[in-house]
Length: 515
Image (cartoon, rainbow, N blue to C red; front, side, top):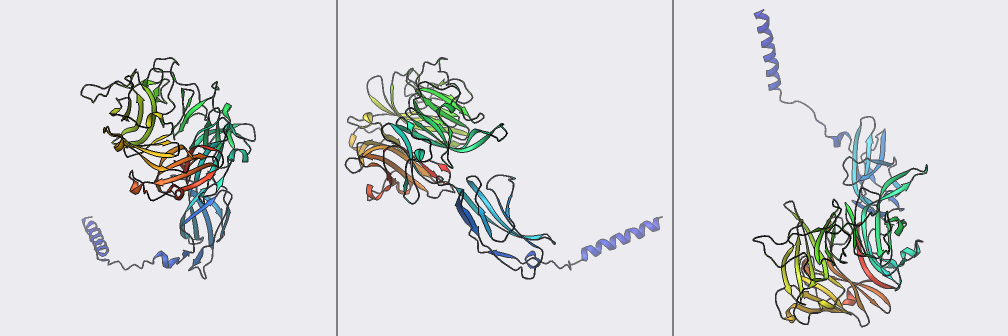
């Protein structure tokens, strides 16, 4: 028995030694030689609109004499894990009626040997939009009723979209519009059952009306009665905002929050901090996602609203060791301006910043430098206005997102206020631009467009003016993203577009993202 075991061990050792001594006499043939196919003649990026015919003619070389070839075009959504590849056709040349939703996609062309199951593919970027995916949306009115104009990338203005697409003007002067990528909407099936779909949508408010439009075709998703489970009376919207997980609207000082879990309708307003409806929310504030920082005109207090709560919450006062610039609840102050600056998320801490202007109990105007984190004490600093400042009398104001500057309109002049402790007016305020006589500034916005897929990146102050000949939209770029303008650029050289009516608000859409 020992003899057989010894023989087996010798054979195993010889086999192992043979393997170790094998110098790798294998012939590996690269796939490019087995299936030497090359795809050329295609663009890297394709941009098209819903309803376009997308044509692509690839050049395929290295297939001479090959049999059993199969050509396939696929489209699938970019950025979605495990998204289903949709087959468009099995022809070498693509001719496709674009009928998918507005989004960013991958377009793939594949050449396959069906016998040996070998393939070569080419993946391309595809952006599908509509006529309203990129442009300047200007909300305007005729003095009594609201409509919507859009300035296209080529500078051409298309006016009165509401009338053109059959819904008619909204009652009251124009106020504001927002865009939501996934607005929940109930849709009735052919069999009478109802399902929930998500739509790209514009929500628009006027002084007396509210609507939600399909952002792809301007059809009405919701008229005013469809926006609420119980219609507020009277309907006098003051502000609106929308983010990925919630929507907010201020109706006559009563505040409504809506999570995306329902069908896109607002329920009952939040209760006040005292458990009653005896509150009146100021027209401006921080309406951002699930977290909202507001001002109550009744109690003269800063309050916090959150989608998980049924009522408003007072903010904390300054604690021991904190810088204390006075109370934030029951302050006795009158709010004049309250404007959101920017949102940051650092080390898992979410912070919202803002500037506010109030008239304090001593009859003096003060600028508040605000930083909101949960319900913490928010006042970071406080600055008294110098005598003669134009800020107390203005209605049209905007804050710079990162610089300590406030811009405001005074008739046809764009003015700048530097937020600082200096008391001399000359160092705090100046006229930046003077627009043509007869024009009056109606809206100012600081827009920062810097996303990867943006068609036009910008760090720009945009200004809407109204005159006897209608509205005009101007854009002034900040130098190197800072707080200064190139003063050699005159207003007539900064004109973006113009149209009829009285403009009240402008929103930028860039590749299906709103600013």
